[in-house]
Length: 116
Image (cartoon, rainbow, N blue to C red; front, side, top):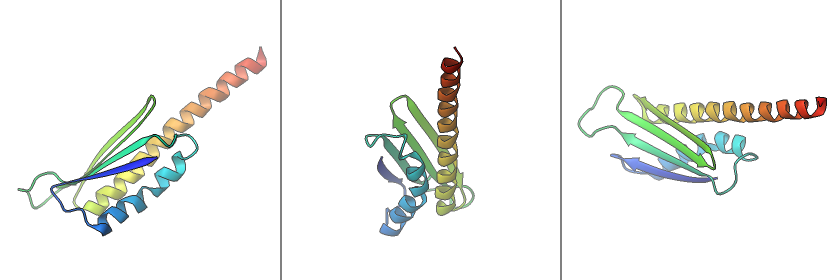
């Protein structure tokens, strides 16, 4: 899976990019068997605006495109690293949910074919 990281209204430091890839490693491990290498995971992190200084001003946004699979998540938080963690958690949860649905459909079809 190819990971593309984009930053908005913040500077992309080496530590920030390493943190993003470290947090998303679980998603990559979970999706390794189902997703082909040509799948793209687009990540955008940054501040909503340059004007605001308090509140939920940081965001993390993730988008996986692969075949018919299309997963999108947008998280806002008080802390940039908190937003990245929440994004990784939610993207992994959504992917596992979709993966379980696909496997249950396959098993259901196999059972029906076996019983006929």
